[in-house]
Amino acid sequence: MKAIPKRFPSTIPDRAVGLMHSVDDYFDMMIQMELEFPHKLDPDRLAKAIDLTLDAEPVLGCRWVPHWRKPWWERLDTGERRSFWPVNSKSKYEAFKSQKMDTSVGPQIKACLWQSPDRDYLLLKVAHGVADAAGVKDICGEISCIYGKLASDPGYRPEPNIGGSRGIWQVLRHIPLYAYPRILLNYWQETRCISNAKHGTYGLPVAGDPHGSLEFAYRSLSADAVSHLNGYGKARGATLNDVLLAAFIRALGLRGDWNGRSRFLVIITVDLRQRYLPGRRAKGITNLASNEYLDFGSTMDRDFDATLQRVVDRTQRRKASWIGVHSWLTGLPYLLLVPHGWMSRAYRSLIMRAAAKNNVPLDFTNGGSIDPECVTFDHKPTSARLLAPSAYPPHLIVGLSGYAGTLTFSAGTYSSQKEVVDGFFDRLIYELPK
Image (cartoon, rainbow, N blue to C red; front, side, top):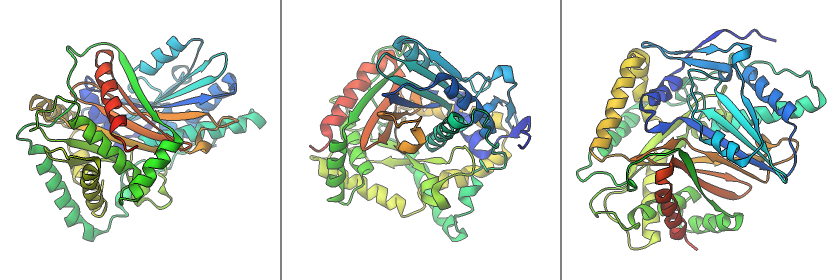
């Protein structure tokens, strides 16, 4: 077995997501996977599988070491890498779900198992600094694989993935040079779009003084409902994501407190693996997602189909022009050459100015479908969902994930804001075609 180095250099994706630590009063930079099983899991085998995953993907067994010039990852000693917490009540399980992660302490994954009388609940918590939603699914798949192998071979130890690239170059090397001018133009157009907000960007209202603990709101769609929405979209040249995004926009505008002037600006997530990598899989656990800003102006259509057509027009236009690449390509020189401390201060200043000008877009992030094989622990779970990073007013991140034909919306925010988010989700579900 290869020796694991004591230190790993940070990659461009690490430092890009690391900028978010400068605004941790607005975001909790963690992604969670929640699984429900009708059978009993083996706690000892599960604990061992999770611990071995810290070696299988060595960055997971590290702490983040901040540095003004270039941060790095440092491996944890054996006594510092506890990553598994069994609990005996729902309240303790929910409390674990609401806990933030400190990447500077590590490790970068933590798990909680609650074995209720009739079913087991497993929650995997992953620091966004090491992985996006696709990376979280890869991590869960690694744990599942090791858990299965330990059943027949208790002495099994995985080979550490030391050489697997975690950098953005594994994507950019597949982008032809002739596309660069178009990509730079895309960046210029998006920058103009973000800054051009004469009457501000519309978001959910703040319910009094934002405060309280972190809580999650959920809404789920059955397999039959999802099948109906798929067919509805296909008949109109739209993807399922387009249909859901149209409902998201209409729910924003029709809640009753929109002033008729603020624009609807939405951030969507693009998984670069799916679009540009052969095999659609990164060589290591990392962040290879990108954000796209879609401006839907300050008008609300009379019916759902008109809104859907506007969504389709925008998403298809972006998909046809190197979607998701420009932010990484144009940010590369800054992340390479500018000290990380300076970049962090500049990023925080940018976010604070946007909030002061009422120009904060909401985030609609689709974590994609969860492969049953990557969440199988002897048997498949009855339900599985991803919880996107939580955000606090004026921000909101609505996460979406699918499993076994179903879909789940989720969002984490202050307990004082949960009623606002619940009301928004009710309206979103109402707007979906029946």
